[in-house]
Length: 378
View 1 (tube, rainbow, N blue to C red):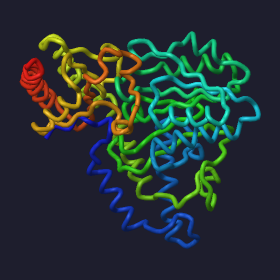
View 2 (cartoon, rainbow, N blue to C red):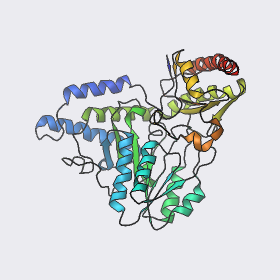
View 3 (cartoon, rainbow, N blue to C red):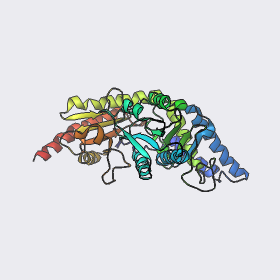
């Protein structure tokens, strides 16, 4: 089996699973309980916070654990808009954000907020000039993802943050780092809010965190007993948090080597452009993150190719898993390269993948694509 759908989810790391299982057995008590077993669970959470905070250069009390990227994005966007709506009602994002961001903005638009959707070029880069023009005294939030989940474009977050603050120092900057965390070095110095999901970095599903810079106010999006400084109520998922911390530790302890290995895999697959007619790469071939490769195949439906590869035990996707079954859902390809809509697959990697797998994948493509094109002509 070759699993090249790591942007949708990764296989849980055995070391992470071991940490989770041990925590479930040894620190199963509710961390809010006053007895010593509750205290033991609480200490596990505090230790995990410290691990994550140190890696992103944050404070421990700036980390809030969630159920994953979608909740983190919702918590950031709705939380800010409710807390700061008396100061302004303009909010800015891009046309190619993840659905868990875009759909928040669409809902806020219904509620009366002025929403600006920034354009992107044919490689997926944000129109910086438009961003500068759109920020004004009424702008309370800008949300721009660091790495696009379909084509792997890396936005210059540091540059974007400086532009935002130079135009309006009170504007809050949120970034969805779900596809960059664990793959790129992240420093939150110039970021106000940052979203992360555990199952993208070999932890379990249902765990993530939101970084909230000290001083940023958030109205809660759900109500309960007031856990996590009243920002995110609900019994805290101790074993998930411990697993997320372990996955974070593993990813960042081998960050550079993992990056180089995956880069070799991506380079091998980009050779398909030269070896097979009618193949193109979406995004930035030179500067995109190596963990994601978007390939379009002329005269072939992406879904047909996906299932043909599946017959060979090779697993890829046609785009974002979160919107793949949604009716009338728009993908990044709709905006950056309209002629490739419907003919694209996303191949995404992790530190578990090998160059040998890439060569097997390429061999399969070279066999399958000519056959599919021949049948289409008939």
